[in-house]
Length: 212
Image (cartoon, rainbow, N blue to C red; front, top):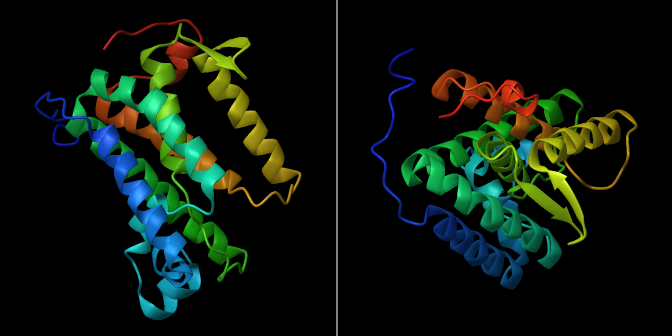
């Protein structure tokens, strides 16, 4: 347990911007060559039949279109930079990759269990949702302006997104959005905070602040 909780030496080297840069580069590659999308996206059939296990990592740097990457990268920029400054770049990068990969593995088994072998999963949303939970945990009193007008406390936004994702999944809204991956991002971020950082986000969300 002590090994799991061993902290990284605090350093700040703009990992968020590097992640954004990698996402943009991969988007440009897949945009110019549509066949590369099949190599980078997470496709359960290819992982099972061809052992393309790198897709558990590359899927989170792959996006379907401009709006898809734009919203994810805006989320990573606005929330990720602040979380990175609080955690330190190495801790943040480890957190981002862990939650993104874990969300991908969870989604893989969910897809396989329902026979969705050839439905591609792509996008940084699972990791970005994890970053949003981290932001709400570190800055519970921060206000986020929805559409630039409506101020909502960060924990309320996390809870709202969770409810929407749950409702969308169980009501079977066919929007092309991987709601389970979003939920997995929240869940693995919560687990990370509990096990590694010894912080309970729910206690902070509901007023029992524990400063880190």
